[in-house]
Structures are given as C-alpha cells and as structure tokens.
Length: 300
Ligand code: SF4
Image (tube, rainbow, N blue to C red; front, top):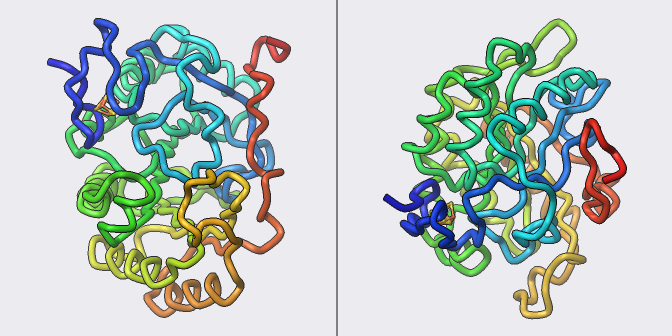
C-alpha cells in the first residue's frame, strides 16, 4: 500500500519513487538539528530544546514561515539508524528534550528510530506538528512520544481550505487532539518547570481571523478538559512570508486588538498557558536554514 501517513492519504508509492501532496520521497531529510531557545519556556528551558527540523510538510500553508525547507533538495538524508543517533547526539549536547518539528510525513521512520534508541534516550520526546494528523498514524507513536505540541489552526472549513487546501482540517485536528491526550495524559512539569509529559496546543492568531480563533478555542474546550492541557497563543504572524498571491488579509500584521480579544476569550474559557508578547514578532525568530546545522558537524 502507498503512503497514507497524513489525512491527504495520497496512496503514493514513496519507496518506489512516487511523491504525494507533500512532495517528499520516502527518505528522511533533516534541514537543521540544534539546540533552540525560542520555544515556550517549559520546552526550551535554560539550555534549549533539541529541535530536529524535518524537510517538507504535508500541510503547506500559504503563510508558512519555514517554506525555505519545503524542497526535497534541502538538508541531509538520514537513515533510521542515523536518525536515532542524531537524537542521542542532541541529548549529549544538553538538550532538554528531542523536538520533532513537522514530522508527520516521516512518522513511520521516526517511530522506528525512536524505538531503536528508547533505552538510551532519557529526555522527553516532543511531537511538534501542524495538528492535521490521522489517529492511525499517531497510534504508531504511542509509548514513544511524551509531549504533543500540535497546532490547532482553524475551525472554519473555508479558511482551512483557502490557507492550507485542507477543508477537513478541524475534523482531523479534533480527533487527533483527543488521541494525543489519551496517549500522554495531563500536563506534568518537573521541579524546574520543564514539561515532561502532556499536550500543549499552539494557536497562531491570524490577521482578519480573530472570530475563527475564538471558535478554535471553543472547539478545543469541547474536545478536551482545558485544565489538562496548556495553550500557547501565538501572535508571531508576519506578512513577510506571504506570497504575492496570498489573500489581502494576510498582507498585514496582526493588531493588538485582535490578539488581546482572543487572549481574553481564552482566559474566559479557563485556558492556562503562554501568551506571546509583541517582542517576538518578526523574522528574526525563524531559524536560519541557509546554513545547515547538525550536532557533530556544524559547518556542513
Ligand atoms: S505524507 Fe505526503 S505522500 Fe503521504 S499521504 Fe501525506 S501528503 Fe500524501
């Protein structure tokens, strides 16, 4: 059977050289693997999160900040064994966790790599995804992932259709969120305030979409107990990455009114978590993918 890892269910024979919507071959490619200080405080801690930025994406949003690493020519290829060794190298560098960024289209290989090193990996594994996931794929990761860090981007089908070509986004994201909570349970922090287990949901408030953001929060609150998860409400949208063809609403910055009204709604629904300040808005917080960075050879 061909690839059915994500809700696109292309059935592409990736091992045989075909590509599907994500445009990625079966071979795992990594654009960057390094300690990263700009995640939420319980993920980045003081030493940084061991982020592994995978090349490609099955969602391909029009406003993507990481579109520089969507081409299959980016980064370096890793076998399953090499990927497990990469996780261990980040652990040796002092990472608080292994943070798998945009992993869905390689989920089967990642599960195999994690299973191979699970006895030697002593730090939590974070599955940092777009929220557009199949429950069947998440079940491959049951027992291998400690923290789920999914986006929940949209409620409205026309918005998810226009911005991500995924009108079925909210149905998949809702089922995925329930499965994530089933696997890892309620949020747990260690004595230093670092997250060791649980689910943190990210939502990026987009310009012109504050009502949909509020609907997303209501959908999350209907799906899982808000006291058992954390919310990261992000305002880092920058129009710098929107293509010329993007809708007009995506060509401006978010206003404080838009962000603050969504934040107030989140608080009124009982969410706890992280509310982003204006200081982190801009392209400087997007990793530089122009020079590949890996633990054991930082100059390649
Ligand atoms: S991971 Fe890629 S090939 Fe597989 S179903 Fe999703 S978009 Fe299609």
